[in-house]
Image (tube, rainbow, N blue to C red; front, side, top):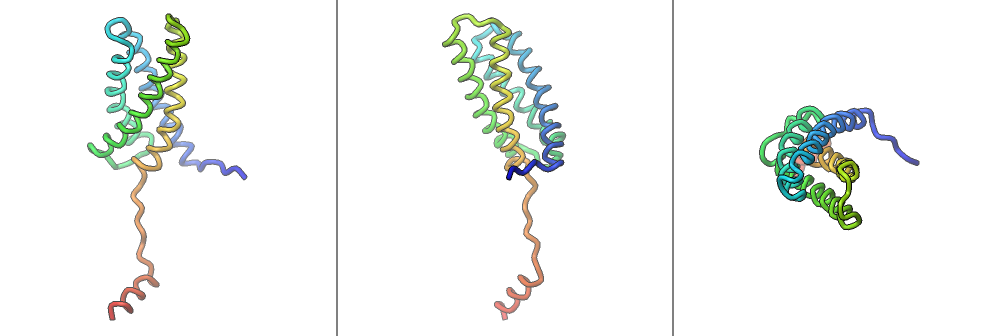
Length: 152
């Protein structure tokens, strides 16, 4: 039987899509602006770094409503982006291997599609690992009695 995601997960995903989609669309526009000024792969790397910093802050504060922050969160998030970067770069390289001079529309379709697929995976990792609430195990009375009995 297929289990549907909980409402909080759906709401977090909706916020993730809005924040990530906004940053992604801005990145896409920046990629077009930088095309010709530098190689596409360099432009993609530059945009990935800048958008990662922005998106990590947005996702932490808005998407996951987490209080976690700092460089550790940024480094963990950067690892997820490294995988996304490799995925989008591979998609662009595959496109350029298949078509020597693809149109801007085709290039953007491939870039945005690859970014969307990578984003779903990134959401799962960010939610489950990077911005997950710390798990605290409450001390139960039975456990407390056992530890007292052992100490006695």
